[in-house]
Picture 1 (tube, rainbow, N blue to C red):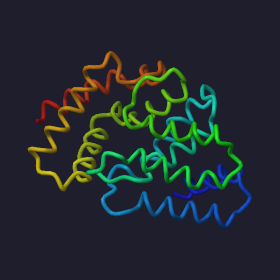
Picture 2 (cartoon, one colour):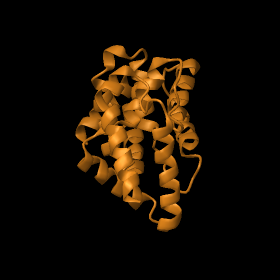
Picture 3 (cartoon, one colour):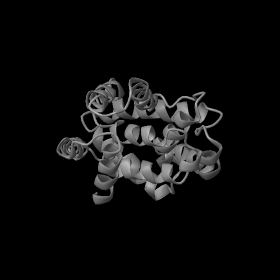
Picture 4 (cartoon, rainbow, N blue to C red):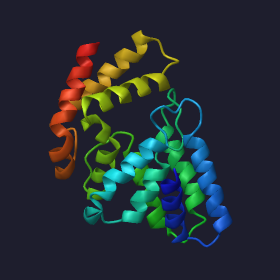
Length: 206
């Protein structure tokens, strides 16, 4: 947690001098990610994404903008909502306008956040690395993956199995139907084979 706070404050401090405001932004962000019902989309997920992207940072073009997108991409998260990414982008923009980032940079951060909704291939590599990091849990060892599925189920606890499992199967089959789950060579080499095995194994459970 302290590592995340330091990263966030150091990042913001490059683009603003109001330390009190930056601290307020961190406190608010932390509150969002620690709110009840966040079993997977929490600060552990943010930390995992930062770790994944740290390993490929030499390949990233707009590193700081990606860091901002990681911190904010799930700041608004309600399982029954279809606009979490859009709402998170609005939340981010409202805070980023108080920095020295220009409109083009803020627009790019917003676009990066929105890209985590559909995880589609993008012509700009930064987008592909970001969405691959967001999906990296799919390629982790089975026990880690299984815990992820349990945490996701807890987040969607308001839905009965008949509804949840139908939607879950649709999502999983969507991934398997793709030529590649991951967009970048680095993530494909690292996680593609395991991800496909995990997804198929989960489907077999239903």
